[in-house]
Image 1 (cartoon, rainbow, N blue to C red):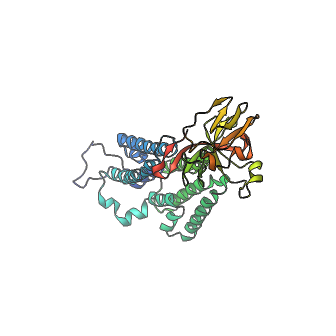
Image 2 (cartoon, helix red, strand yellow):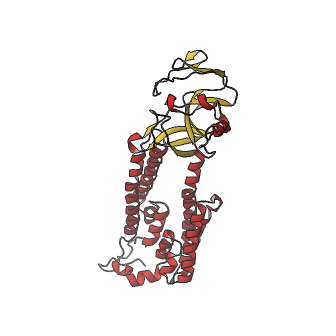
Image 3 (cartoon, rainbow, N blue to C red):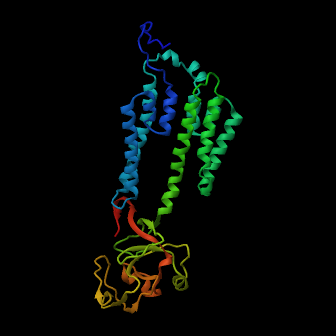
Amino acid sequence: MGRSSGHGPPRLGARQKPEKSPWLAVNWSVVLPGVGQLYDGAIARGWFLLCSHLGLMGFIVWSIFAPQGNTLRGLLTLLPLGGLYIATLWDSHREAKRGITLEDFSPLSYRSTDPWYPVFLSQILPGLGHLFLQKALLGGGLLLLGIVTSYAANFYPVLLPLPPLIWAAACGLAYRATPGKRTQWPMLKALLVALVVTRLLITSAPALVYQAVEQTVIPSQSMVPTLEVGDRLFVRRRSPRYQPAVGELVVFYPPPAVLARVPTASPSDLWIKRVVAVPGQRVEVRDGQVWIDGTPLYEPYIAEPPTYQWGPATVPPGECVVLGDNRNASNDSHVWGFLPQASILGNAYKIFWPPHRVQPLP
């Protein structure tokens, strides 16, 4: 039988709205914002919220990592995204309670019979649901296990699948430990699968980003005026087929020639210079200009013309010539010779911080 609306008995033959669990709706919205509304039957609003979250997340990623994106704008967008996420949780709970009297959800009867509230707490931190159910030993163990494995996964990527599995196990055990009638096991299984997949994607994202992008900070004035001290850069890691191009800003580890000439250099340091010549080109620095195969290189980005002479020399295979834009205050190829391409980490493509310096790099 359907529930009474509080204004008299239901009419014979009237279709009653299926009863929904507000905290099951919230659990779905925690995993995938908007799916709680789909569960409630608010289809249009559910799809709108899901697409809005995905759109905002895409905009944030684009703003932070794309060359033309504004990093500060992307970070500020986290605020409306967080607000929309919380509003989505509240709305999914509110939508599920429509047509059901408040008496059905008094604190005493509700907390003792609905298993989805402990599941929600376990999604926040594994073990919280058990602590709520006054199962302190198991709750404390799950909480400690979840925190320790999450911390360890930051240093050992092989452990990344463990935290989502522990979160899912804690949710399943919280559902099972709740007293009262538990009949929605298929729904629990679907929720746990979605939870594991979603959290695996989230926890794997930093590792995937790190495989493609590195960040570094400019420590000296060797690249003035293009780069200033304190600029933070995103570096696109080079692929196996990567070939540097003239004019590109490359980030590299100091090769042996640098380590031999610069006592303060460390093999783990990251240096940045501009490529001015690639394999097969004949390069020379004279008369305040760089000459490539007898033609002067157009360089509007340098601080001042070089006052030194270097070359001529033909760049050997697998190497390149790199110079700082602040030509007369840069420790570069004119001091220690050719740069092996194997030492190159990748090319710098964006200044992402500070905010007033955000810009793409050539």
